[in-house]
Length: 261
Image 1 (cartoon, rainbow, N blue to C red):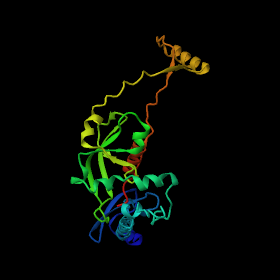
Image 2 (tube, helix red, strand yellow; image 1 turned 180 degrees about the horizontal axis):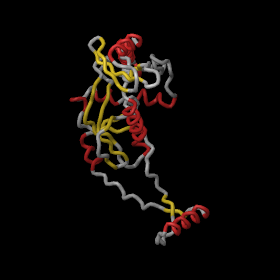
Image 3 (cartoon, helix red, strand yellow; image 1 turned 45 degrees about the vertical axis):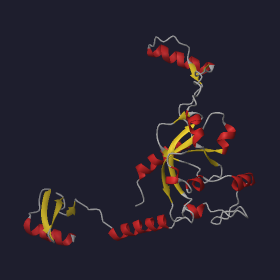
Image 4 (cartoon, rainbow, N blue to C red; image 1 turned 180 degrees about the vertical axis):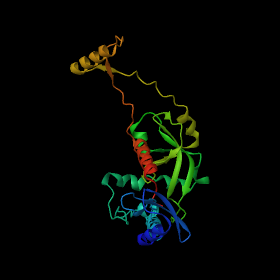
């Protein structure tokens, strides 16, 4: 290819000073450059090689991997005699055996209700035992796994009220496979909603360590600040390191990297 371009250039362009030249080869325009010291030509526009078959194969592998993942009905299936998961063979903790026999999962309750329980309120046994303030989910959306035998698996979304504080946004209900969900009767729903949480206590402050306090006061003097308040450290954590925080971090990371397909 380079020999052909060199011969073509020699026939039409005089060798001498450096410059650009355009040629047509197989219906395509090729931009070339002639070096002034040698008269050789090089291709300045190198196109990235498209590997369409390899890209298609990568997408097919990602799609097959996505389709081969076990469904939730297979992942969370349980043998009540041995208390083991048939898919993984893992045994449930001994402390959970009593709840498995007596309590229900969320979708076990939703499967037998009208409209799969949309609009109803559900709480958990652990919340009733651990907190005096009402904690519950109000279901707003349900996506049922129709491939499950009793349609008792899937995903649910709702508005969470935790310790009497209601959140403003709808989000996915977590731990739906736990055996401690309970339906709140309709005659008690208003009692859960009318609860008024106590006002939050004021933020406490403690003094900084002596060396750090001296550094902050020296920084104020060098910066010309006229603030006379004693520097104090607030005993309040601005970032709540709960599951939603890590989910947002993971979503931001995936949005930057892109998806597999």
